[in-house]
Length: 393
Image (cartoon, rainbow, N blue to C red; front, side, top):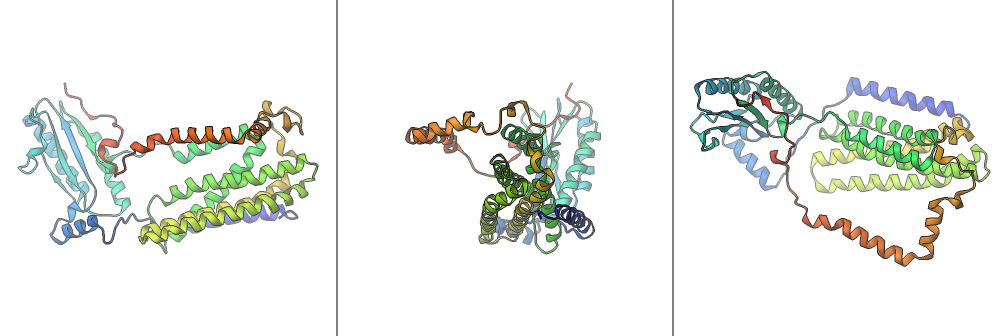
């Protein structure tokens, strides 16, 4: 790797392009199968299917509407037309209209607010997504005079326009800039993590041909891969810079960083893979597939720092501290003047007070956990969407 950095870099580039090409040609399909053998909820679903209520075995939602009088003929005609079109979209599901005998209970006493129940039969996650998109489009295009229309339920929630993984990357960039004070030193862990995460996701796309994996597998790989990938590369880059500052040449500093921090990366990555594979004990096919997917992502983000990163360090050499920020203007070798150096000495001189204070602080921060409520999300937990339809006048 040190003698042929171009070969290593080219190998990773070929691997990345090759995996994505294979994924595009032979990538499998993610499936959300939340079967829970032996559970009471699964017994209820099986009972519904056995007695002809298959439309009640999937997700559900609501079409809520508000008007001065929901029984007004114009409002009733408009809403019944909407429900008829919606029933075609959700087939083979069913809609219980508030204008039916069974659905009359879904109207308030003032007859100003009502909702229709939408029951979706069990189907693939992609089909649920398509139903949600079509339903939102239909409601947006529907104009019932004097009526405000809303959709309720997880299926009809519009996906967020931003990526939480992207926010994580931005936060990591800011933190690394502050810690390293150099654009180049900051960029190396980010670049290494990206290579590891992207190749891991591509491999997961191929592995889904052989294992049942949920639709959020890629998000899980990205979330964990970003964390461990940046962390592992950070170890090696930090040790490399320390070697340079100690008077080593770039090759010696690289060898030292891989021989020390690289060993820690191998141990930590292997530990994470073993821990994640512990999800096999749950005994659910979907969870087993998720465990394999995350393990693949961790494996690739572990291999990138100990193979790709040393090759890149061969190109960077002593220039790793170039493009520094103003707060890194202090001279090399002046670490003993930094606030962190002085703080470490304070802690070492008075370890017990530091231990007690930090423990109390952590306990205080953990107090809200005592009031945590666990359970499945409901429509009430979803942020209020932009009103659809026309407001009541």
